[in-house]
Image 1: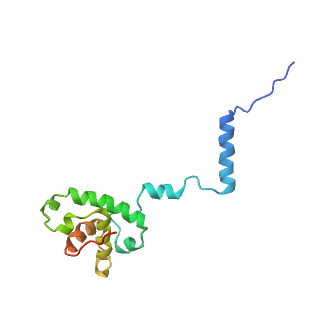
Image 2 (image 1 turned 30 degrees about the horizontal axis):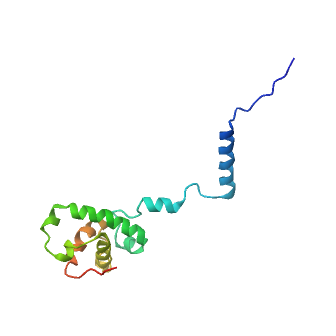
Image 3 (image 1 turned 45 degrees about the vertical axis):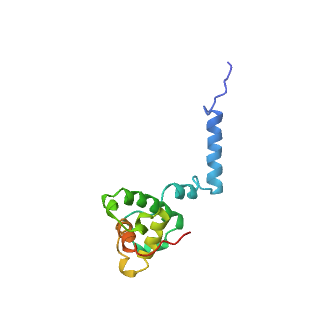
Length: 131
């Protein structure tokens, strides 16, 4: 009788994938680069407050301001605003206004989404700093 060798049933792609998984596990490398996630998802949400704003990464602040700026410009009340400092507002300017807003401890407990609506109006008499 002829004996046949028994195969394990793995393809070369599966073996390569298993080897790669073992190397990642053995070296302790992360499976996903954390900086890639930080770039796609801002860490700030509208429910956070002043202390989180002050401690946030500048990139996360800018990402939040871009989204908040779009919402601010789309709001019905925005069309009634006369101040040129509010009309000339940019996402970067909104971040400046939020920095101004949260420099006062009395505002610390106000959520970011409310502060993004209040700050441009509250500081509309002050000129925006040019980057």
